[in-house]
Image 1 (tube, helix red, strand yellow):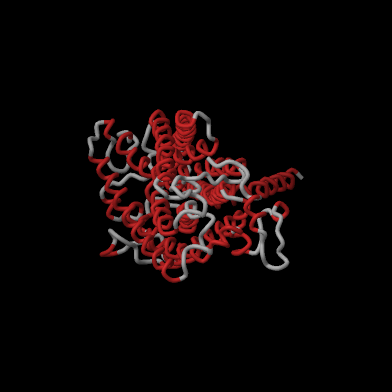
Image 2 (cartoon, one colour):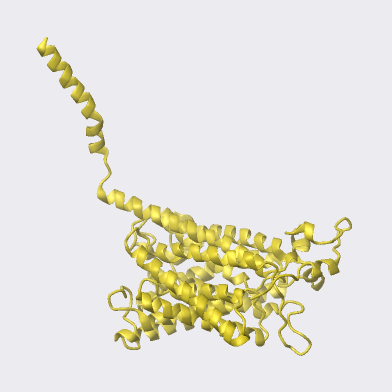
Length: 471
């Protein structure tokens, strides 16, 4: 009896131990868990960056007039889709694959994401799967493309968005990304751009400037004597909501560029936060000095300019420097926006000032403030005994990237202007792009029009779309 009880007890213990033994045999290693955490963080960061498209949508809707808000969201959707498909087909390969003898300028393998880990040598420093790398990087090209259209709102043909998106996401942006992040010639020189002040923001702004110069200002933007006239957006709360969404998304943008779940994430998030706060104060302070009021729209653009400015240096500078970088970015943005307006360049969103000059200042800032301890790429900044070496590399990066993107974009836009045309008809612009380009209004109940005969009451459209304030 005792023997039977002993056998039964041993059998029970064995049964209870089997799941634990099986788990011990199949338990993931520390390396597997670390890779899983890195992959999860990169995907979360990618989602945050993709959600920035909602921020761009709300920002552009708020700064647009009622008659054009449908065209804004349609453009956001189609460009996100085109950016994804073109980057999958060719852009990711051009940006990050091994280019052989042309490696300094372009990647030439792994199209349609068919390569393996070794193919995309430009991202070999991070161990997350290729799929995660792609999802994160495609979010960046979509942001850069969104910047292009901020200057061209309310008067551009929808077909122009589509065609230019194909070229920009498939070729122009990937070449710049390869030069800086993919092992290209600027990377060899030690160009510092942790998350894209140059690659993403300056590129988008350079293309935006090219398109805007050929497109011309909106009807009514300048009076008969050439003086700028304020064309107010219709919804400042939506515009500020867009700024806040972009601010939140920027934590994926900057901290996600670690491409690993390390404690560095917190440090990058800290500098990003401090810079954005400084940008708001800098821009609103300039508004009060210049106009004796606190302009809400300028405060929002100040935050964006500062976030752009800290994007290159967020992992390379101390917190105190982040405050200075953000504050100066807000001031530069305000001065640039006033200047651009006066010289006849109609930029409804302030993208040239916020993303362009913010990108220039952000790129240069690492040459001033990068610390010896944090400068894992390139050299320390001027204020830390690094001399002018890194500052010179940063300046070279600005000049070369701006020149390439501006000239190539100017060529594409010039071809489009000579063929299909860039701009809608004047009557279409007065009626609003929603009706003529998309056949629907974003606010149909607020516009007194008669659609039954296929025509809009232009007086009703114009008067119904001029409420709100524009920063």
